[in-house]
Image 1: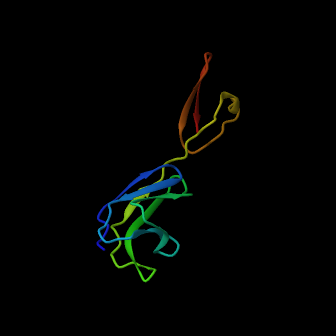
Image 2 (image 1 turned 45 degrees about the horizontal axis):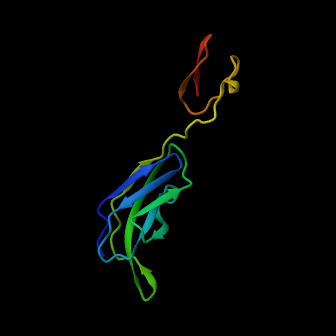
Image 3 (image 1 turned 180 degrees about the horizontal axis):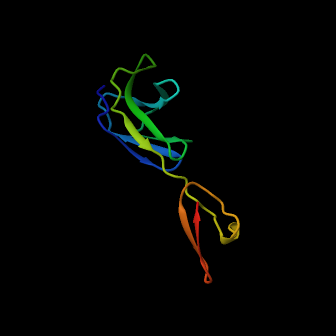
Length: 130
């Protein structure tokens, strides 16, 4: 089979979706993720689809992926084609949710990431570094 020529990504705080075009002659695609500790790409999945969702990622972290088409020969998966170009993507910041005015007092603030939030009350606006 040929090589995957373009990998596009979409992301959330804990997942990345890789999308790529169908390669003529390929039975499926190996998904490779770069391992910083070993300095190598590791195969994390095989799929027959032209997209794959990588879950369980950390927020605000950069990840590197490649896709490699494969065929089967005598029932075995064979990776003959070259890997795609590298897709580099940074996951989003985890969203702050379920924060209420009762969670905040004038003497103590919860610090979550580095975001300013304006909590408004009729008497006085409060600015917090979250």
